[in-house]
Length: 255
Image 1 (cartoon, rainbow, N blue to C red):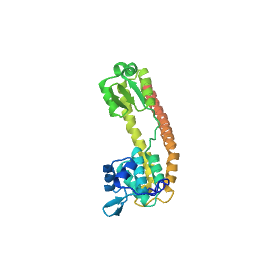
Image 2 (image 1 turned 90 degrees about the vertical axis):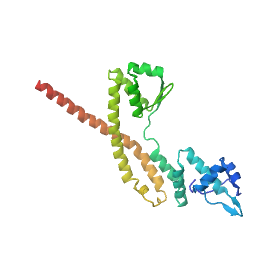
Image 3 (image 1 turned 180 degrees about the horizontal axis):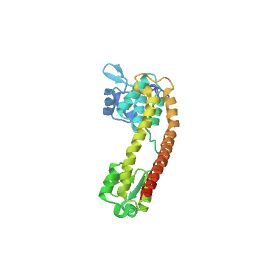
Image 4 (image 1 turned 60 degrees about the horizontal axis):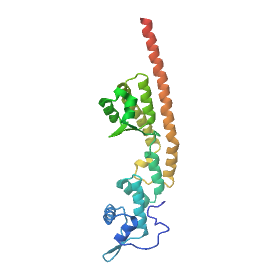
């Protein structure tokens, strides 16, 4: 899949009418015409009033289907097609996009039914706390329970409740922590954008192999981002706890 217009090597060198091409690609003729209107397909060969399509068109349609299954939008696919037609390696560009946009966290979602939630949270399972959890993006609610985005965060929440901390206080702290975490993430994303991905902000095609090189860099940086965040948070806790304790001692001396 190096060049987006390459025909599949095992495809016979045959031509297709529009209905035949749609059937071979597993789509409707209406969808095929829509792709053609969006300029996702190169023009067919015309023989009088008949449009003939070849293996390259079939390969293009199969690639579009593959990219749609991966979650690409038609606009994004059009950009990839344009890049491929300018000589860039589409497989490398797709790999770079996945390195950028795939989850940087490795949290495990967990599902609880209402009985399990009641057992875990008791009378603190209020409408207000549920609404706040929804607003923070931690849970999705269905008729038979909830799905939490992170087992680690859910376990930590339950542990704090067991220590006597009200759920409302946990959620208030969570909201503030999320705001600061977003700010830290924005700083690190800015570093990556400005120092590594500057070439993506221009109209100039990436040099050969550059997309693969950037993908390798991003894959190496992913764990570094979490290491930096964890270390900075631990050091910040040291500073803040020490300052808080010294302030408490000062207050006691003044009593």
